[in-house]
Image (cartoon, rainbow, N blue to C red):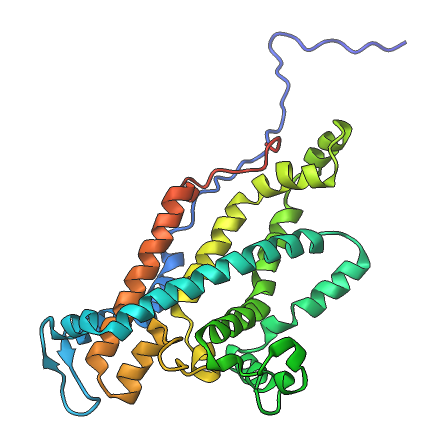
Length: 311
């Protein structure tokens, strides 16, 4: 029988320790390309627009300094004041309509059944189309002369949806929801799949059904996703333009003349680029302020995790 002697006092066991490499943050050099791109195509044009908003320019010759004349004319114009309210109204209606639809569809699409994956792929098709193409198609479909309203008067009445402010705003909200709801659905689908399954298992053990699980687990866990989606809707809604240009052209009258279309009318129809630049700068400020308010009020700037029980 062979026995192994224990190591003496003068002997030490050698154990290989794993080499741990430090994982610090990337250096600033990694951010230089993106920073340069953003500065060239965002910051510099924004500065030029800000300077142009204090000048008069028709597109020919050199701009002439005008001081605060453009801003004074801007707020003295009732159409401009009305356009701001219309922009806020359309944005608010977009948030109210798209948010619940996106949450419900996103939670449903997060399931693992094969039919959900197929239907989700079909539902996301509008994301592949440009806003211009979508607007042209729906403008033709809703045309009062040869579109759906002319054949379905029992639903559309006289068929002229673009003849009243209520009908035109309803069409704009519907078309925007049809195109952009899939984008926000995709956000909620990913956020729902990131919720730990153990939370639902614990709730099921306690006797909670699907409805209670949705309101007490899913919705609280989707808080950050909701804030992100709402901010995207606010920025997109305040700066939308092509849908109004193609479908209503600001009409009837000025009933759908939102601020972005008002800017287009001043700059590219009336060749008043100074006033157009002032409107553009005002839109940037308004969108930024509203987004910051949403972030501050919601506490999203804290970026606290919502995945309870996950270390």
